Length: 75
Image (spheres, rainbow, N blue to C red):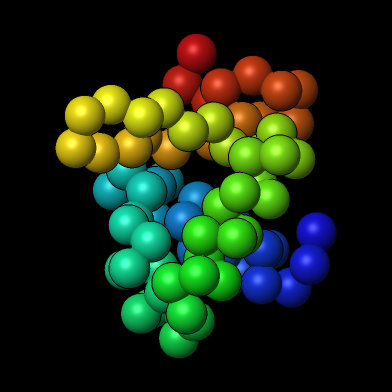
């Protein structure tokens, strides 16, 4: 995993653990001083790697984190 992707994952996971939900792309970009595009690319990579699962519903997306065994963490 490249540096930006790891940085985005760590930040989003930490925020998720504290608040119960992941930050938005814009919030993540602002907090990590990255471009929105860089965060979006990192999120796509994390999904391809199986580290997160994204569920799209009208007006928002839900990001869930996958543990080392490949299971969603809240299952």
